[in-house]
Length: 361
View 1 (cartoon, rainbow, N blue to C red):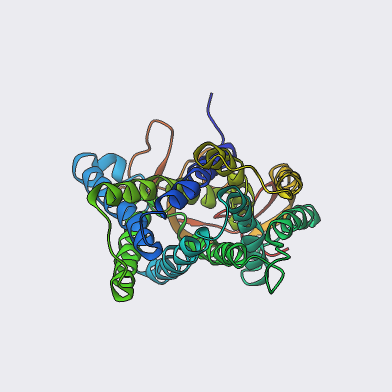
View 2 (view 1 turned 90 degrees about the vertical axis):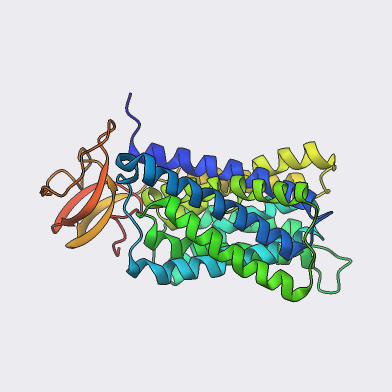
């Protein structure tokens, strides 16, 4: 049975949520022996080097597989630079510092606020359309985070560590919306460039701050966590989902990551949840359900468009374009990648703001 692109996108984002949710408490565990900026550099350097090696191996020994994804072009570089700045550098440094002052289970749920941050950036800056159902869901998630950030003993009434994680979510929300502009390109190449560039920058910052590097086993552990949950497999899955679901929907489904983070946190740290945790987790669950079950359909117009990305020809958008002799053959699942044109078209069907539905409403 062939899996639809929409279903495939949901599965990819749930996999990304699993890897990220599991990696956050592991990063907190490593922070007991590794300085925060040093750990941030290891996370991204590990993912960058691993996937750069994979990209070179695929290009050398499996050229047919390599050609199925659209390569990065010069016009993509500004978007990639912005993604590295907000996602690899600013967000990771802020998170590593904040995790030192926040219980692991609480941090795991707070990271669900990324759905709110991503949607706010998507609607206010990139004008992505969302409905009342999504805003209600985001209100539930915001309520959940407000319960967890409240700290009557703090001079400001809120835990600074928790507020740092909220700021991290806004950085990642910006990263997600920037990344959607290159989500149609080869995710392995994107993760390689983002990881290495972010890792080098973070290494320089760590050295300037005088933060030491630990023993080789801990260096390896930090890099493995990065390969799995920060710049690595998680990001590859996220980018593949982003091209299908759009920024706000992908960010919304990604908000399920606290479920995995809480489970791993309880297994590692044996921490009993704070009094407000159950209430916060309930609001987070309601918000996530509203987001996952959202549907959207209306008559819409596609403007003429030329782009390059991995696609198949049995959908509603790639069944009529012409192939020249330079177009690569399709794989066993009917996919290939090459530059192609879309003519203007008007139709109605259920859709999300993917590569072909970033239209105005």
